[in-house]
Image (cartoon, one colour):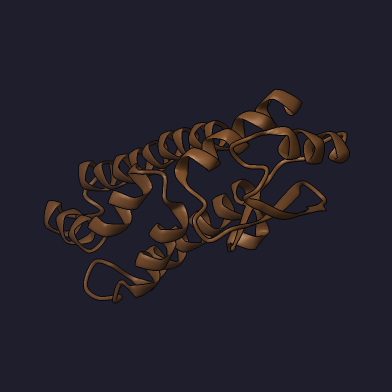
Length: 167
């Protein structure tokens, strides 16, 4: 079984030595492969959450970074960005209603079509939001132009904020 950490270690041998010296994980790590900004650990099948925590602590002690904590911060930002994106969309619809360019029924129809996309954006899951948006059928007030505009904006965010291997 392999586990991956997206992190760069200045001294790979020091990581190998620290893993080998640790009573908890030394016998459970079968191999370590270093790639650019990525470390792949080949581990035993019964690798546990405790082993994961110990490994992350070893990495954090060497690098000053904790991969899981850094990822949690990333999702916090993606969640905030999702809220801002959705708020801009909602504000635009309200503007169209206020200026007579759309009806409240149109806005309701579009919001209903986009409810899964909205939920994923608000939780910071932009890639899942994109997949859900692709699955939404164009009809009524939810036009191809609206769908394409949302897809373009979401894809641009994904390309700017996710590792390319994710999309």
